[in-house]
Image (tube, rainbow over all chains, first blue to last red; front, side):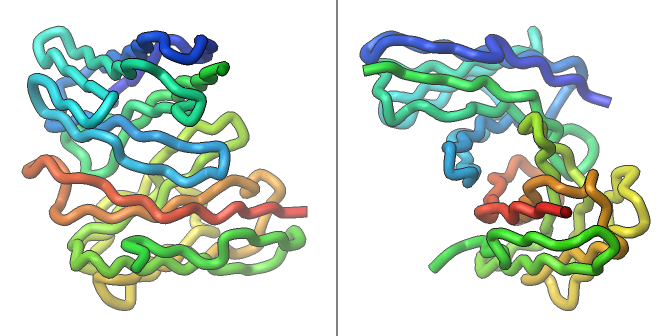
Length: 108
Length: 116
């Protein structure tokens, strides 16, 4: 069974800072998802990656399949980026296996 | 239009009751899921259905019974509710069965179940 580790668990930063959240997993996968959960509780899929890098606005996600590692970066962070960011992997089974999430707070 | 919709959003009920949570997706997806998020915000898969067929049942007590009347709906029925069932339950869907194709997952807004 895949073990998904995220770091850090909690991160508080000032507005404008560059943010990096890391995710590592133990078993080969077919895809990795980065999810965002706001205080209201809804979950939004930010990225799905199987290789390389993707960019959407101020968000960048990278994955290194050989090292079983992915990072989520936020450039020019803003208080509205405050949320829980969850890494999830899809392997041989159909469902997702989740990390425990990174609770990000961006202070003005 | 909401892609994946769950009802109700909040559910408070007493121990021992039976309750259902409904999920519908209008995306034409083949696969639907139920996930449970515990008090520590940790998400874990409960069930996966592909074209109305049960694919995954992850050591969930048999008090939990998913029902899929058609591939657009996956309802979760819970019998004899216990305090430990209190959690947020998320429904999700994806276009194809997971491991062969890299597919996006779309989540419902969650149902916060509180058992008192």
